[in-house]
Length: 605
Ligand SMILES: Nc1ncnc2c1ncn2[C@@H]1O[C@H](COP(=O)(O)OP(=O)(O)OP(=O)(O)O)[C@@H](O)[C@H]1O
Image (cartoon, rainbow, N blue to C red; front, side):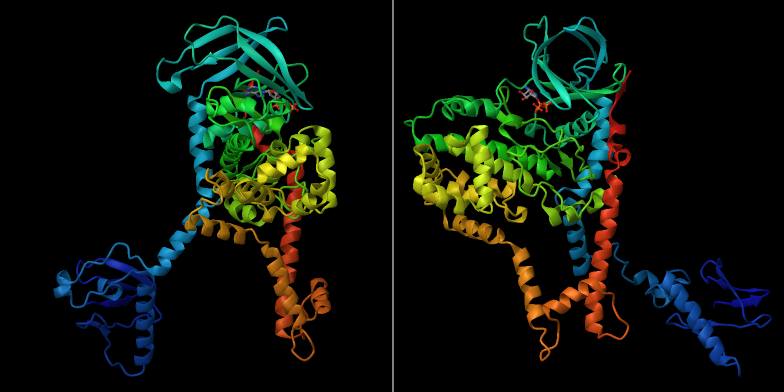
């Protein structure tokens, strides 16, 4: 028997099992007493008191609904328990029930979280890996500048990460400043060697030190990100810090391992190219006579390594934006080509899409769009929000295709000896622009009167039924969306040794699917809009093109048809989103906000 006793200002529900008071509820029946009987089905039976019967029934229903709704109350009102006596015989409720919509939702959420550039790995990287790295990585510090040719570094906790030695502090004043390797607008790069190399010392090789201006901060950020996500893609980065003691103000110091002396540019300018690279990457001279076949194999290997490095960067949400042979270095230690100079890179996982005003993208290798993100699509306002939105922005803009265009031009230069010089490349770019960036059209113009060097390039790309030409034309395209991704390029049949003829049925199918996915679906969207517009004659109803255009500029009218208003509202919403994004873009481009990541850079006084 459960008693609902109303005394004073509340009703108290008493649990019949343990007499605990479960809930109190303000009572509209002050001073009235009720007795409720618990039926075998668990619903209280109501005494038929004239006058208040329907009111009481409503009250009890409301209270029961409330308890059932929130899952609180007498066990039998919120559970499928039946008669209390037999409760122990009822099946125990399942902890977690898997439903089809639930599973679809979970798979969708997981796919989103792991889609490029990776929301979930991004949070893990930022809050776990970066933190652990700070604790355990060896650090470098400039302690003094003796004379211009001597620098000193303190190695802190060297080897701690490998667990061989305990934390120790060594003053190493025998680093000799070597030759200047490069000098850009924003920094000077030196080779730094150990004066007295210890025999059998593997770890303490030569280093490369870049002293950079304020823009070094972004380069440190990118190098640290790359080291955690895809270390093999780029030169081995050791440490970066802000050196504050200099009179000029802050200077960023970046330290890498010395990878080797040749960049792809140096190697390509040699008359021996690509044979001069053969032993470097393949380890031995191939058992093939000199000729197109052999050259093609070497170029294939170089391209695969470049695409592999790019795929690593792109998969973690970094776009390099300055891919060129000068920024691809041959690592003598690991016998592969690696990418250097991340000073112009964008990290689209956290929304760093920053290029200083003074920085010019290299026009020789830059894709025609210039911007990796649509000018109407800014980075999100803060790192966590940017991270959460990054898969959407990535898919909207496909910013990685900027690097693919540059890599395509490198492929072109490797295939055509006559396009390897700067002046020849500039001239090629002009010709391509005149052909609306259509490589096939360019080929049709130049091939009839081609020089032997140019003809040799076409022959090389035409090997195996033109599979090399196919890959090249899917990289060098005007529209970013039509360009192949690094991952898809790596799976392209060009990299199957046997070439197109030897492709299996499945591989041919894969190629067809790949070609189909390269179609420009923007055109399809235009076609649908056109269809909508054309169906908009007076007779058929709908919209004419002119009406559609008008709709872009007008607000929904109260008296217009619901169809028209819906479209106008959608367009209004779209305008609002674009405006908001533009405003955030302006805000972001303010330096104070766009340099937030520099807080992560260690400072040394
Ligand atoms: N890890 C490395 N190992 C060996 N050499 C390197 C390494 N990093 C850079 N270099 C050399 O230093 C040169 C300049 O490096 P980097 O491109 O990063 O500097 P930069 O200031 O941007 O110069 P630039 O404006 O000329 O590109 C490279 O061309 C390369 O020869």
